[in-house]
Length: 266
Image (tube, rainbow, N blue to C red; front, top):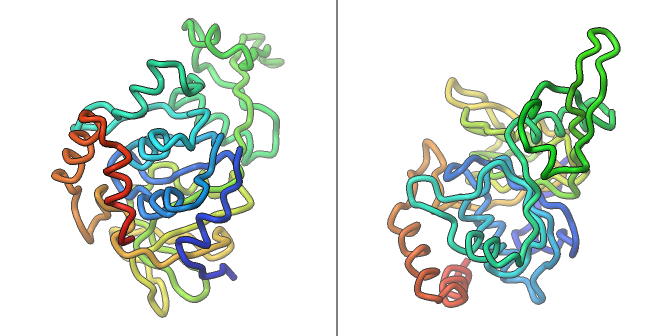
């Protein structure tokens, strides 16, 4: 059974240098409360490799706080709210390493890990310049067709963190149907932390939800409004005003003041 712990206890599970995968998608159901708990730590974690299918405000907070050394994501931004300000600044200065990824490379890398093999072959990237940016990505010859294929290396991470709607005492978790790659991420790490909006006696599936059974989760955390200012359908929408407040603070050089404010009472 999964262990119920506090946000601060969950944040303490992230060692320096870890590869940390964050669930959700763009501005939807991101584990923001967990990230705030990481930023309350003394000292904050450092030298993290951040793995996201798409990275958003939760990831920008970690980059701006100096916690991230490497980023692996197919997209890093705030969707309709513009660029991710701290990532854009640090990347342009060369202060963080950006591993070039696409949806294809991330999907194939995760599939390889789930299959227990070192790589997953694909036609992706054939005929592009992307392999020049990723010398670690090799090619292989299909023994049946003789075609050249890209061999995307398996992707592993140390800790996965996902935000969900509900969790029960057995460790079952309810997600909404906007899954992103959450169901794939849970197979990449031994430690899977799920923050949930509500604790219920028994999680039940509905037409607009998906169940993640107990064996997938190692730690559960009660975190009401834990995705805000990203949305958590059907409980609350995107906090557009908070996104703009964040962008304005970063543009004014007041990132640390913003962090101090949003982590003070959480």
